[in-house]
Picture 1 (cartoon, rainbow, N blue to C red):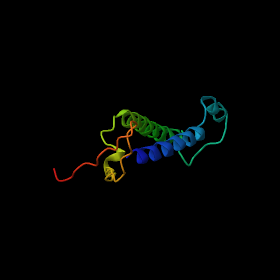
Picture 2 (tube, rainbow, N blue to C red; picture 1 turned 30 degrees about the horizontal axis):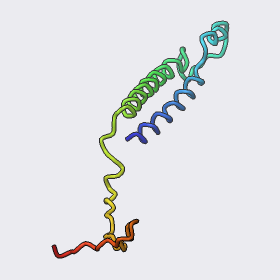
Picture 3 (cartoon, one colour; picture 1 turned 180 degrees about the vertical axis):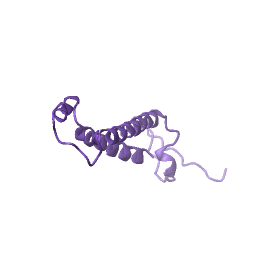
Length: 113
């Protein structure tokens, strides 16, 4: 889930950068007021309303993915990576007991009792 959110977030981020760079600045319309080109393909206002709507929706998706990623990253995990690993069992010790420091030899344990 986090990977999908991150991919969507990066894609929307890059798309938002491109769509903002395609828009005209506020002072760019002054040249058109004095006999500049008429953009008849998009109507009298040009592509501004369409680009504004696309920018708004991209910004909304960007904010939603940002909030979602922040929420997912702050959740405390209840699982463990070690759940799938079987516990290690200690092998039976077959070592020969060493003599004590005073020279007495310890007796091996009796298994029948």
